[in-house]
Length: 322
Length: 240
Image 1 (cartoon, each protein chain N blue to C red):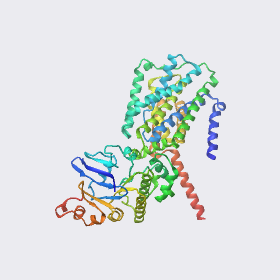
Image 2 (tube, rainbow over the protein chains, first blue to last red):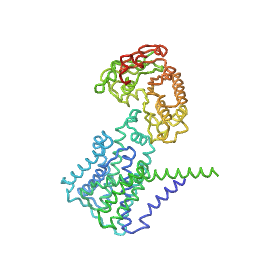
Image 3 (cartoon, rainbow over the protein chains, first blue to last red):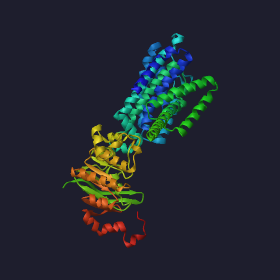
Image 4 (cartoon, chains in turn green, orange):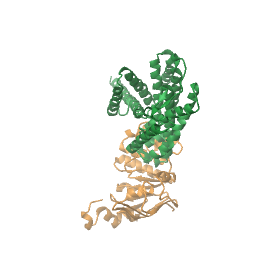
C-alpha cells in the first residue's frame, strides 16, 4: 500500500513539475532526465535482464535521431507533426536491431561487448559519410515558433510519456515468463536452453524492444536539441551513460535505472553548466563509473535493500534479547 | 520389458584421449539403471552425448525407438529426457520457485510448489537459489527436472558430496517415483547407494561397457573388481 502511494506521489510530482518549476534551465534538465530514464530503462530491459552488456545502444539512439531528422526534412514536417515521427524512429531502430542482434547475440560476454562497440563505430562512420545524413555538417531540426516560456513543456510531457511507458514495460517484462527466461539466460544460458528456453528468440526480442525505445528517445532528443552531428547522435558517452545509470541504481532492477538516470543526468548537466570546462564533467563521469564498479558493483538499490534487511533483522534480534 | 533409452556404438575422442569407445547401453522403461565406473571412464561424457551437450564421433542414441543423436539439449529435453549435472547447475539469482517455473512448459505454481514439497525444500521457495546449501541445490535441480515430468531422468551423481540423511531422502524419492513408473539412469560413485537403488547396473571402463546386469551379479564380477582396483600390471598407472 505504501508502495502504491509512493508511486502515485512520484507520478503526480512528475506530471506537475514543469507547471510548478518554470525555470527554463530546470525544465531543460528535466527533459534530458526523462529521455535518459527511458534510455537507461530500455538498456536495462535488454542488458540488465539478460546479462549481455551492450555498449552499442548509441546505434539505436542515433538511428532515432536521423530517422526524425531525415523524415522531417524530406517530408517537410514541422511543429507538433514531428512528434508523430517518433514511432517511426523507434521502428527503424528496431528493424536495424534484428540483423545486428542475429550477428552479435551468437557470442557472449566480452566478445559480445566488443562486437557492439564495433557496430557503434560502423554506425558513426556511416552517418559521417552518407549524403542523406548531411555528413559531418549534421542535420537541423524544423524550427519551432512556440512561446519561449512554455517551450520545453511538450518535450517534457512526450519524454515523461515515453519514460513512464518504458518503466511499465520493464515492470511487465520482469514479471512475465519472457522476463523470467531472460534472467535464466543471464544465470546459465546453456542450462536454460537445456530446459526448453529458446535462447536466440528470447534474447533477440529483448534486444529489439530495447532498441525500439532507445530509438524513440533519440528522436525526441534530436527534436529538442534542434540539431545533430554524427559524433553526438552516435556518442560513445551515451553508451557509457546508460550503462552507468543502470549500474548505479541497480542492474536488472526496475527502479535502478530510473534512479540512476534521475541522479546522474541532472548532475552531469549541472556540472557542465557550472564548470565550463567540458572535459571535467566527463572525467568525473569516468571516476564515478570506477567507484560504482569497485564498491557498489550491484548498484545502490540492491545494496541498500540488503543493508536495510540486515538492520531490521539485527533490530528484531535485539528486541528479542530484552 | 521395453527399452526406453539405448545408445549404440558411441565413440568420442577428446584430442588423443578416447573417452568413449564403441559404448552401448540400454535402459529399460520403468527401471532404475545405474552407470558406474572409475574416474575418467566416460560416464559424464556419455551423459553429455545422450542429452545433446556434446556430439559423438560415431554411434547413435535412441529414445523410445526414435533417433535423438544430433539433437540440441533443448530438443532432447522436449523429447522427454531430463538431466541433472554433477556440478549442480541451478539459476542462482532466481528464486527457488522461479527455478521451478523455468523448466515447466506452462508455468504452474501449484505443481511447482507440490514438487518442492516432495523434495523437501518448499520452505525455501522464495529464497534466492544461490543462497541454498550444496545439498539443497542438488534437491532443487532434481525438483525442477522432475516438475517438467520427463519420461526418463538422468541423474549425474545425485548423492555426491551431501550428508547421509539427505542421501536417504534422495534415494527414497527416486524409489517412490520409480514405483509410479518413472525411468532413471543414475551415475554414482557411492556403491552402497547404487547397489541398493538400482535394478540394473552397467559398468564403464576406458569408455567401454565391461559388464552389465543386476547389482548382485555385478558385485561379484571379476571384471568390475579389475576396473575399480586395477590388475597387477596397471597398478603403476594413475587412477584416471
